[in-house]
Image (cartoon, rainbow, N blue to C red; front, side, top):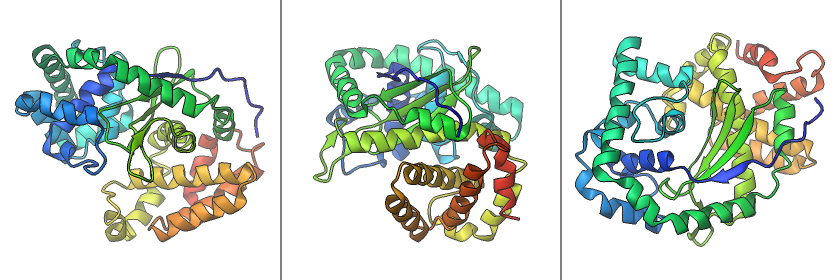
Amino acid sequence: MNTMRNIPKPAVVWMPNVEIFMLLVNLTEEGARYQTKAVHPLRRAAWLRFDPSRRAPAVVETGRLLREGFWLDAIMELALAAEVLPKASLAYPLSRDSVQRLVRESGNGEQGLSRLNRYLEMAAAFTLDAEPNEFLRAHAEEYRGAVGDLENALGEMEWLGTVESYFGTEHRSYLCAASLLMPAGFAFGLSLGTPEGPVAFHVTGPFIETDASLTFASPEQAAVGAEREFIRAFLKPVISRGQLSARSFVDAFERSRASFQSLGYRQPLDCLEDHLVQVIQARLTARRGGKAAADAMLKYDAEAGYVFSRQLAERLEDYELHRTDFPAFEKYFPHLMDSFR
């Protein structure tokens, strides 16, 4: 593996844009169904406080986007890429995959981007009319507590250098965000392109403990979740740029579409992403000396329906043995996809 660089500890924050877009999601019929058994008190308070805004254009359009496949990860990327609301523009470009989702549903690129701009204008209008920032400021102490708990639970995150080394590339900086309005148990890893270089994000809602209580102060869940989502942040750009190489996986997905649809997958590259995130995390666990735990992870995933996990794990072992030939994961990606021919 490549030599690891000294990475400063990622900052842990909360972000108003994330919370405003999550509020829009929660006010839709689709969003209200996400994680109904363990609901944070602030998320419940937001439902009550903003109930009169359920017919606001931004809420209605959020519901349409969710139904059409522009799911929470894409909305979260939009929240991170947008100017601070109520500005109605992007500070950074969206990924190719997110734009393609809009294009797919809108019919062509121009209509898709126009729809995105209209949606940002709706979100800006909602921010001015419903005043969600006032609500967030009133609960600033709860957000500070969540950020402090998550920061303590994450520790120094020394393992982040191992993730960089495994992919053979790096991000300019890393950021962890705590969200009290995100459904409990949900988390997202995203990579955002900036003029100074890409930034990796790990955004997480509260963790669910075995007694169904909610907390950010769970070191085991925090570490496992952050590693998984930072792996996803590294992986997303590789898959996006490697769509041509991934055609053989797409064919394999189509042959088993019915079984993958039962797991909730409509798009093959989403299925590939989750397969690889899980397998790479298992490989990193094995390389840290946890072979038994890694084998158990792969067995669990395979039994849950991720039928390509073993195959991918075997090919990744080959990647690890030939890092001189493949110093970066992206260089190996076409060979990894060849295994599906």
